[in-house]
Length: 370
Image (cartoon, rainbow, N blue to C red; front, side, top):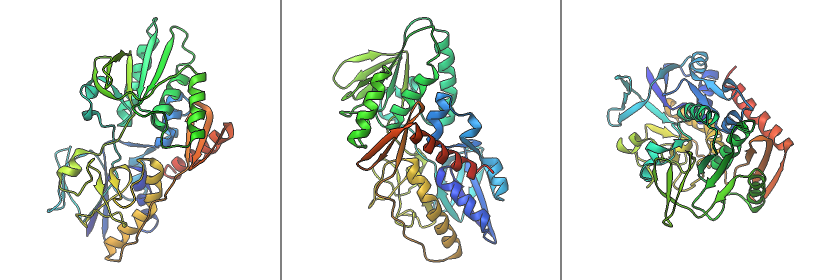
């Protein structure tokens, strides 16, 4: 019997589980390895922080899903991989052999690139750790009776959405004055989006009193202090890190071909360019000929073709070529039930955009929860 091991409960692997459950492969054992019991839907995280969703509304229970799909679930993480022997060393002190391996482990902010960041900031990922940190942060703020300064490091969609979501969640607390600041090393926020979207969020942030500190690269963190490349520094009560992306260290250490940032290089069939028995999708992977932003939208699109190619590989059939979409629709929330849509050079906004986003997000979670 062949064994397919899926490492990571990311968006792409949810589609793989669904496809293989709908049309099971005879004589194939499937194992999902994931370090958490729940798979968060990243698009709903700002809504969860803002208090618009409950935990279960934006998380998929992986053990329940795998039971329904007749898949073995291993609640642990991968420490290392022996690609020659096709064997994984797991954090629960066991090893796991595979015939075919698929990796969809996402990414985390690159804290190790900035001295002191790992010890002194609250990183947006892993999301499970972030939610615990956010809970503690809210409790600490509630006990304060003096002004509180919060820095969000990262001027992309994540930094802007999380800043607005946090402020919305804390809006009813009148015991103190909250000051939020989005810090980025780019000339403006949301640099990968069109001028309409940037102007819209500049206006929203301004109306809500959230400052933007642009062209400010953070080169160090010590206690509650950010040190900038320009030579100055700023002190905050809380620092939230929502910038960049890096993959798990074991991927490159195993000998997989990676790019300069450590992401697995895959071909048009989502197969490792160095190891034919390994596939990858989502944030942890990159198409050398078609680089794309690290976004859940691309991971969702990669799910169905990944499922088909895993099936083809297990059956000894020819693989399909896949080209990621050149652009993706982004529905960016503003903390409250209001959102801005970004599609290439086009942008539009309104409460109806948030309701549209809400329907899309809820359908995704419900698809894999029932």
